[in-house]
Image (cartoon, rainbow, N blue to C red; front, top):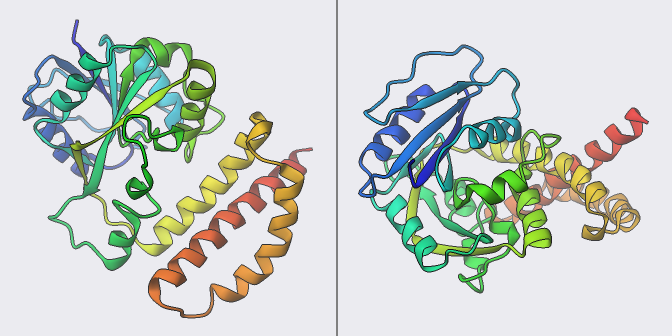
Length: 288
């Protein structure tokens, strides 16, 4: 029985996945298995890289469902969840396990640093996003020994399998904030504590454009409407709708003005997230 099961979801990115698997083959800590949940539209053979891969074909494009299936089929005491575009430092698993060995409680998770892969042509916008910007917000971590559910981020996260079986991902959130919602639920129901280790490093091998991230923010907004309904203590929905009614016309004007880049990006982040919230509320109304 391996100590750690590394769970990776992938979709139509076999070339990038290969880099991630190669980095796992180089791990100093060796007592692990790798489970690939493959959501690709056209499935292809995945090289094993000497890892003894377990590959699970997933038909529905639902990351939450894919992770739940992979976790159920895993054998490790701990689960490490990473993206298919996260190149792992050779000491990644070792760093995660060192913390778990010092803090063996069931309610402890470990979150590591994800920075851009330096081999990429990193744009000013990507540097604005990460590691300290809107994507991961590491600079906002005040207490690394308990950094809060907003850092339950599945690019580089480990915790006990037993807890994930008790509190699985919500499959009604197929993508976008599915991890943060689970972190919130675990914090509320199990007093989850997330320990941040800046030296447990993965490198994000993914070019992200402004339009890419704007689309992701809209999906996050749609997902958050469901989260707010599920957890009504999270947000006053009538007040939120009122704020959106006031803010959207202003944001629609401001986003067309070419301010200094950082200001322009922040305004557009607010606009596209708010646009997603409105889409979520509109979908609710249509469904009813």
